[in-house]
Image 1 (cartoon, rainbow, N blue to C red):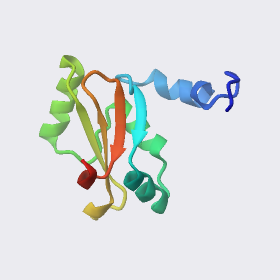
Image 2: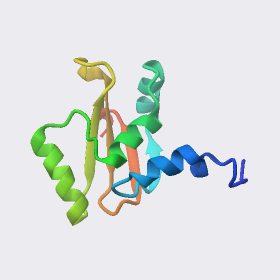
Image 3: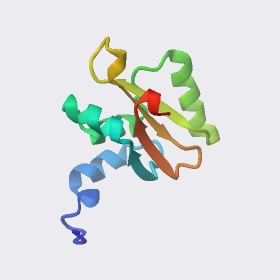
Image 4: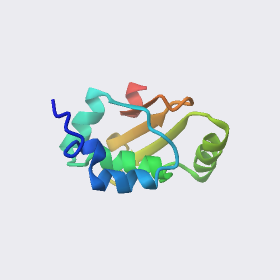
Length: 113
């Protein structure tokens, strides 16, 4: 295990710049095996989706759900983003959910909810 803070991915300059634009904390990160398999199959980085999520890019949610997410940041509710890895193919959707207390953010396929 790498414990050197100078080389740890969590403290790299790229991650620091990303977190500077974060709208809320992600807490502990988790992902289901199904989501990880889907991301690998389509060569999409989970970290790219997390970066979008934490910046308030909710992905493929409707206007009402986007507004609900924005309000959730103000009032401390759960936040849900949806990213479709292959446009037009609902079987390639990945949800990213941050719990209301911001203790955990999980990536999963909708059917795993």
